[in-house]
Structure formats: C-alpha cells, structure tokens
Length: 179
Picture 1 (tube, one colour):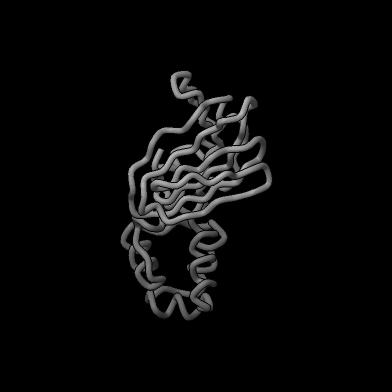
Picture 2: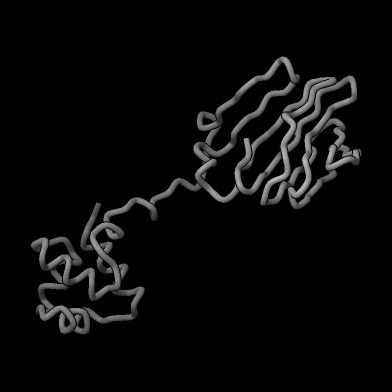
C-alpha cells in the first residue's frame, strides 16, 4: 500500500489543499508534500492525527474494502451438481453470500428442478438463457421461456422446474443470498 497516495486521495476528496491539511494537523506544508510523494513516513501518532483530520481512522485507512474485486473469471466460479434434483448451480461471484445479492447460473436438466425455498424477506430475479422452465410461486405455476424473465418479492415459497425434454439455463439473482 502506498500511504502517501492514499492520503492525497483522501485530502482531494475533502477538497483540502496541502496547506489546509497541514494547518489542521499542525504540520508543515512541506511535510505533507513529502508524505504524499512517499519521500517520508509519518510516526503512528502523526498518521492518526492526519487521518482524524481527513475524517477516517487507522482501521478504515488500512482496510482493503476499496480494493474489492469487481470482475470475475471462469476460475472464480464454484459449481455444485445435484443429480437427485437434476440441477447444476454455478455461483458466479465467490463468497456472494456475504453480499446483498447473489448471482448464479442454474442449469436444470430435463425433468430437473431447483430446491424448494420457503418465503423470506427479499427479492428474486431470473432470466431464462435457454430452454423453458416453470416458476412455482406460492400455489401457482408460471411458464417462462428463453429470453423471458421473472421477478418477485419472495413472500411465498418457490422453486423452478424443467418439465421439457431438453436442459434449461437460468441466470438467477437472489437478495439476500438464499442458496
């Protein structure tokens, strides 16, 4: 981690000049300039003072939350096959259960179905990439074909079924994560 660059970004975000930050921290403008160019390092006490003036703290400053991964490759996908129910689930984003939503790809083999999910707080979206499925929502069944989508508040039990003779694939997004 480049401390100076991160301090400069925080200073700019707060629309402060080097001189304004130096005055708030009782430091010289030259020290702030050298710090931002990584020509010097602050003591822990000085860094705490600077971060306090920038509206943050050591824990937030050194957290990697800003470096969170945004693009995922094929190697990141985790797949699980359930032959008993006749489906294959591919989790597209690793550890998505910690996020607000969980995108996945569900492949329903012919005659296959997803797990049966009870009502919960949240929402579900699906887009049928290939084949045909039946969305069972509460006591009703909805036919959904390739190129069509579904969206609902998950206040009823639900599951997907593939009654056809060919496999079907659905891009499925659940919030909060339910799989």
